[in-house]
Length: 398
Ligand code: FPP
Ligand code: MG
Image 1: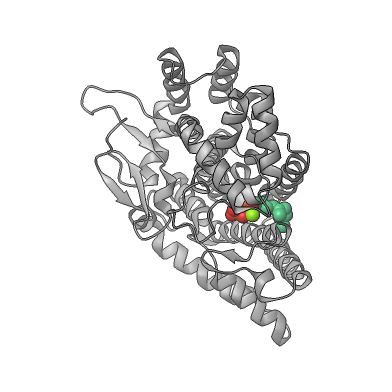
Image 2: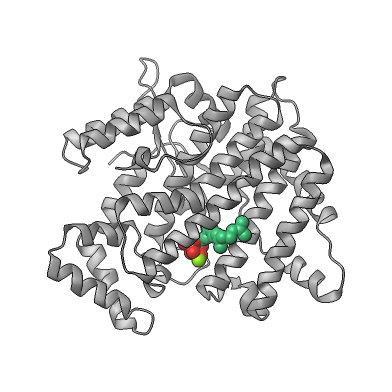
């Protein structure tokens, strides 16, 4: 295991764009107002319960990094793009909590716990409608088209996830497709929207998108790992996924290695998790004891970015160890890196996606990952050629 030296906090990463993010908060407060007491209350609640703002931060960092004049303030278009991605995210979580019947979000009662579910649905719709209106009225149609294209992917991911949970079926490809659609796509759109906002070339915009998507894949896998970790400070109850009958990567890796009869037994237990703490505990400890969490962590690492070795610098492994986003420590492990700006620069300069693929190939050779070579080549191709928009599920197969 690599020892990570220079730990930096999320605040360090955010620092170069603090002023822009403050301006964004003011912009959102000014724009997102509602008529009537109830809707105003609900909207204020939703806005005050926002998370750490990873998506707008990515927009602003990418805008700063790709701005024609170094260090120039990101400006109105970046602010608009950041608002669009953040409010899509906020609305999707309000809807998600209704679907999942979740009571808590970020340590506070969810909107559907505070108000009846149908009102929470309307709140999510209202936020989306306002978002779209503000976007269209701005006249920045390229940004609105770019960002709002991601909403369909979120819905597709949610439906696919629901179908898999209802049928207790899941494959590696379906899992990767789901997390791509429900998480990675919007992070990809965030990183690329920043570049688009400041007039970067199409190639740059596409590269930023791939970067954001890879961050998003790692982010969601880590989120799924944390769901198995009772001590994680995520603001959500532990083992939610098991209680909701969701098969995520840690459990999937155990199911994939189980005999047919054992697999049937585990799936039967999963179907009882919504009503039985004993079954939840049985599956949680099985996943832990049978290496499901460490397998998922390995896959997560595959989406992190080892950068080029060079004579003057020690090998750097930029490991987005996202559990540190949560709780009081809020740390990202970014070895020998001071902020995401530098990380993005490295990525573009060093052809880092190639090395990410190579790193994975080495891991396979050392027997650390059970990854078929053909699929690895597909990953290489994705990294080398990239893709702008859409998602080739094949390319994300492990
Ligand atoms: C959280 O997943 C859910 C999402 C990231 C996406 C939810 C998308 C929808 C409900 C579709 C509607 C889309 C729009 C644009 C309104 P999770 O349940 O695994 O994570 P959690 O543990 O944080 O709830
Ligand atoms: Mg949920």
